[in-house]
Length: 547
Ligand code: GAP
Image 1: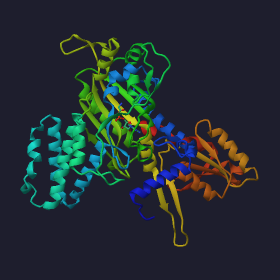
Image 2: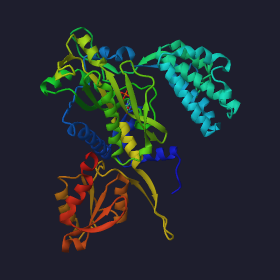
Image 3: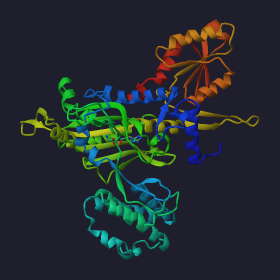
Image 4: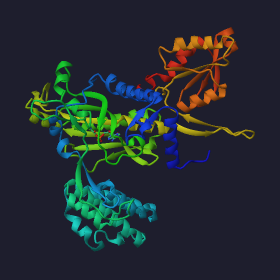
C-alpha cells in the first residue's frame, strides 16, 4: 500500500479509534467539548492494560515502591505551597481583530520554526555545526551568562559568517534571526517579562493566522488550574482546585505512607489518577487534553544521592517503553536546558509521533522543594530519620528527602500505542485486490486476547464455541462472534488487535481440536482445545514485558 503521509496516517488513526470504539469526542451529540474525550468499550480495556503494565512494573516489581490513590480535591494551601497558584501560568495574548487567544510563547515558537526552516538549505555538516553552536548558546543562557546577548543582537554581529563559509548568506541571516529570537524568548519567559514577550511578537512581525494582522493586546498570565466551589471552609474561603498533577497527593501523604508502611529510604510512592489543566491551546487529539490521566511515581532518596537515582530512573523508564517492542529510533531523551524552579535535573522521554518528536514522559529531579514547601505551609515536619550509618560511622539522622519523579501521561501513552500499532497492509495478489487494517498491539495490551468463532451457526458448533469461551473467560478477555463469513470476522479482530482467533468446525466435535489463527502472521494451526489456555497464556503473560 502506498506510504501515507504523516498527516493522513494520523487522521486515519483518529477515525479508526472512533470507528472501533476506542476514543470518542466527549458530549459528541452536543457537538463535543473541546479537548475532552471519552474512552469507548475497547479504549477502556486498552487503557486499563497500559495502567496494569505501569503499575506492575513500578509497584509490584519493586519491593520498595507502594501505590496509593489520593483524592482529586486537596486543601487549597497545597497549591499555594506547590507554587501552582502563583506560577502555573501560560502567557496569553489576544488578536483584537480575530478575537482569538494564543499562547505568546507558541506564537514565537512558530516564528522560530519558520526562521529555522532555512536550515534545509544548509549542508549536513553546517547544520550539525549550527546545532552544536545553538546548544552552546542556549546553555550559556541557562548558566546565567547572558552578557553576550547584546553582542549577539547587534548588527549581525554574533557569529562571524566566515565560521560558516559554505552557508548561503541569505539563509544564514534567517537562521541567525531564529536563534536570536529563541534566546530572547527564553530569557523573557524565564524572567516572566510579559512586556518583552509582547515586544518580541511586534518586533518579529508575528501575525494572527486568522486575521493576518498584528493588532495584539498585551500579554497576560493565565492560570491553568480549574477552580470550583467547595461548601463552607473553616477559613471562609471555599475555592478549591481540580488537581493539575497527581504528584502533590503523594507529597502530602509522604509521612503517612512512610510510617504506616514502615518504608525505608530509598522508597517510592506511585499513583495513577486524573489531572486537569485549562489548556488554552488544546490540540492533536488526546495529546493535550483538559482532563487527562497521569501515572506518577515519587522516589524519596537521601540528599546527595539524587543524581544517581535520576540516572537510574531515566534508564529504567526508557527500558519500560522499549520492552513493548517499539523500534528504538522512535524514542529519544530530551534533556531540559531550562529547568523548572524546583528541579536540578530534568529530561523528557520523547516519541516520534506523526507530528514530530513530542514528550510522553518526564523524569524530574525535584530536590527537596515540594516537601520543604509543605513543611513550611503546613507547619508539620516532613522529615525522615535515617539510622543507616554514614562514612563516619554515624547515623545520617533527620533530613527532608530529595525526590526523583517519573511522570507519564496515560492518554499520550495510549495515543503512542495506537499510532505504533496501526498498520494498513496490502494483501493483494495477482488475481485479487485485498487489504487489511491491523493493530499490532503487544498481546498483553490487546483489549481482547481471544476471539472465538463457530464456523457456522448450526450443527452444535455455537455450543462447542461457547464451551471454549466459558473455560477461557476467567483468565482472558474473550469475544464471541458468529455473524458474517469467517474472513470478515478475522479482519474485524485484526482491526482491534486481537492476537488469537479460534475457529470451531465440524472436526472439533469429533477430536476436540480447533484452528488458532495468529493476528500478525495470519498463520493458522490446528491445536487441541486442552492446549488453548497455555498457548494464549504464554503469549499474553506480563512476564514477557516485565522479566
Ligand atoms: N508532576 C509533574 C508533571 O505533571 P508535566 O510534564 O507537566 O509534569 C507530565 O506532565 C506528563 O503528563 C507529560 O509528560 C504528559 O505526558 C502528560 N500531560 C501533561 N499535560 C497534559 C495534557 N494537557 N494532556 C495530556 N497529557 C498531559
